Each structure stands twice: as structure tokens, then as C-alpha cells.
Image (spheres, rainbow, N blue to C red):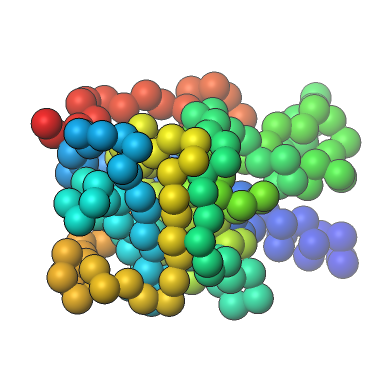
Length: 218
């Protein structure tokens, strides 16, 4: 019974109910945020407000992208401080949480406990700012939900990914001055309420979908 309870809890985590790697790959496509092409990519910077659950991508004082995000839950908080982008991986998979795939089917599993072929949970458009912490595609919950990562809606994650580069400054704080201006009436997605995709889709390359339209408004 304990083993069954453990597997049930792990399945819930991997289905997007908790954890950084346990992100839904949402089917809801109505949410979006306009992104503007920077005149000078070297002047791009990122600011994150944990209280407002908002990401501000700026070029100087000009907003390039303003969007909602999902933040770390109690005990797994998103780190505060000044960082820089260190890695970018468009087709990233979790090294810890995912699935064990064998002749008996597809089962939620940690990489250390996989009895078959291990396939990590998709974390598309990964932008790392600290070891094991990054921005990536996933369901944007209205309450703190991740293991410290910052999730972005599937329509927004590729825009963010292409706006930043290795070395882009990232400042994460409890609040930001932009909360009272461009982040005051921030629209938020509802993709967290979508049904979870089938596991066969999550372990396939099809989960890494290219943007359907232009990334930037000039």
C-alpha cells in the first residue's frame, strides 16, 4: 500500500500538480503576450517580481515583453538576487523527474528509479540563470507551484527564449517598480486548468512544438 501511495503521489507531481519538472504542456492557446524586437540585444535585461508573479523583459526602460509567471512554492522558493543567463536549451528535459518506458507501458518515475528507458519531463525553451533554476514552458498557476523555476505559457516561452542570450542580466526580487505601472493589470493564463496531455505525447518529440507565428512585433 505504501508503494501504491508513493506512485500515486509521484504521478500527481509529474502531472503538473506540483514541482518544477512536473509541468503541464498545456493545450490552451488563448493566452499570449506581445513581444518587441530589441534594437540592441546587448541592452536587454530581465526583472522578475515574485509578489506580482510577473516577468518584465526590458531594453533600457522600454518594455519588450511583460508576462505572467508561476513561481516556487513554500520550501522550494524561487531564488532572489542578481543573476545572468548561463544556458539555453530549446528542447530541454528534466534530469530528475519523468517516465520509465518499457514493455509494460509508461509510468511516472524519477530517473534514479526508472526500471526501463528513462524519458525526462519536457521543459521546453529552458533559460537557466542559476544551476537547476530556469525559465521554461509550463502551466502558469495562480499560486506558488514550482520547485523554484519560473514557468511561462507555451505561447510566450519561445518569445522569452529568443529575447535573451547568454549573459543577459536577470534580477529577481519580491517586488519591482514595474508592478505599479506595466504590471498593474497583468492578464493571466488559465492553462493550469487544462487536462493533462497523454503520457505518449509527453515522451515524444512532438511535445517540442515550434511557434506557430512571428515571435516579435517590430
